[in-house]
Image 1 (cartoon, helix red, strand yellow):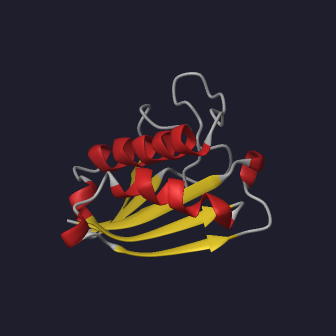
Image 2: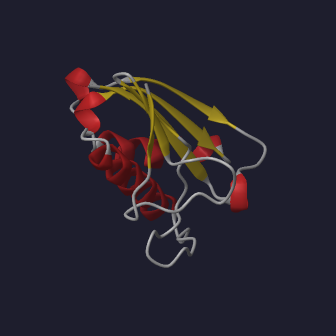
Image 3: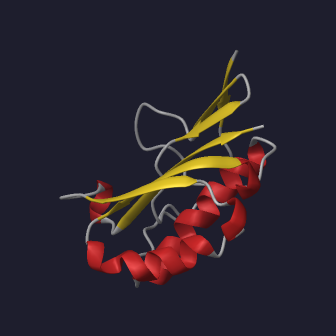
Length: 126
């Protein structure tokens, strides 16, 4: 059974999509960027703070679905510049126990929404 997940603790969707969909025991999040959920403003001063806000937005969605990062089984990371990989990986890695970290891919793309530097989505399971 499909259930829509939305929380005011993460940025509101800016198009015809939801923050996440829970289907049976699987949660699929939409890609998150560094939008402040309270102001709707982009926070892209540096790649570390940008990545942290992206992860905090994902955390808020996971919490709304009754989950944590321990439930995440797959992540997709999209970077505007692969040279940012090490810094993004450092922040991203702080949210997971390395021994139980999810599967992941990281790809460089030509452009991301609102010209951000990083976008991340996750799949999680209860």
